[in-house]
Image (cartoon, rainbow, N blue to C red; front, side):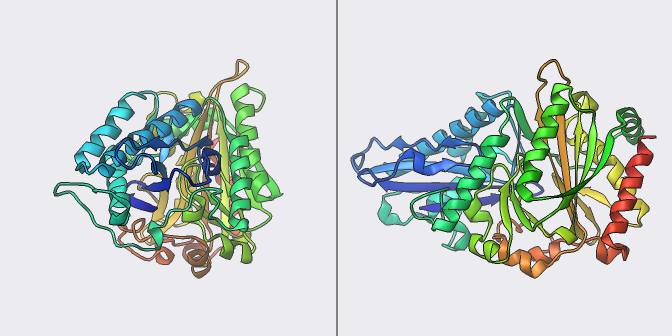
Amino acid sequence: MTRGLYKQPGGKLVGVTVRLSHADSDYADSDYIDSAHTNAVKTVPYAGPAASSTVIECHIDGDFFLDGDDAGTRNLLHSMECALEQCAARCLSDSMVSERDVTAAVERTMLHHPDVRIVGMGARGIAIAFQRAIDGIDGADGIAGIGGNDVTKVEPRDDLRIRRHTSPMETAETAEIAKNIENAGTAESDENAGTVGTGEIAETGNWAEYARRWHALKPNIVHDDPRKPQEQMDLDVEWAREVAAGTREPTLRFWEWAEPAVVIGRFQSLEDEVNVRTAQDEGFHIVRRCTGGGAMFIEPGNTITYSLYAPLDFAHGMSVEESYELCDYWLVEALRALGLNVRFAGLNDIATQYGKLGGAAQRRFAPTHGGPGAILHHVTLAYDIDAEKMTRVLNISREKMSDKAVKSAAKHVDPMRSQTGMGRDEVVARLVDAVVRVTM
């Protein structure tokens, strides 16, 4: 069993796991339910000489984003996994499969799902992660491997371990958390919802148009009471659905966290992203949100989070990238007024010249009951951070940091406290005032 990783420069991270099992083992598809997209991982029997004893199972995870409805998202991920399983079967039969072959197979699958778009990752990136997983399998397992000059050998290391959700090999504590976040993910799933993220942003949007749309939106502004992590996840989906149905006015909610949390993205692997035992020992609650992107390390006094629940037509006529600029327009203006040199960075980050300040994610909710549909856009900012604790709780792979100028995850994040000298409550108050002003 191996897991290969690939970080697309300026984009997101994808992981591909490949598992070989003997046919007489006592596992079933239900043992490998994926809490990221709530469908069983399908296995493709190998039809070669070892077919009586071996099956192949592939799984895709990561912090990428998907733009499409829920059913389409599930179908695309499942189809790509099946395509990789077929490629792995060819490797098992001693056929040489090039990176280009795998890329072409994934691209063909994407073409069959035109209504779903992967944001932050491409077919070649998925092929490279698959290649690295195959290369990591011991030769005794019968894998021929990837042929050609594009072979990338990856030495075995911690971030190549494969651990599947709620598998019999997990600890009881890990399985219980996986079960909890799987249930949460199912509850948050929306049959007509997708997840989107930004592209590379050069801040070229029409800011006058952004200001006009915010003035017209006039959202209700709520500085919420402290809530537990799972309640925050549930409330986000509940309010977004209410806006989608036309039963709630546009709203911007400032969160207050009642407890420490690790919030993993919709398509991430729990065990590969979080040191579960350490998180438990440190008092962190682990939850899964309904949007893509990476894991968030939350300590109540060190974090500022907000959500925007707006009708779909708020971003009408805009690309995904432009919609991120639109939704964060007021925030960038407010942070600059605090003296921060803020810019959009990568796919979904907000940064200064010193490092990452925060990250955003979106999900679209289709209209229901004659309503306008909704955009859920949420942002988490680092007011302060215990970087040493973060690196103990989160499993941050070398691959994830591979395209960063600063290779240390602890140094990659630069919080507001060090740049403003203000207390957290003062910063939040200034942000509330700023969003009120842009809607006047």
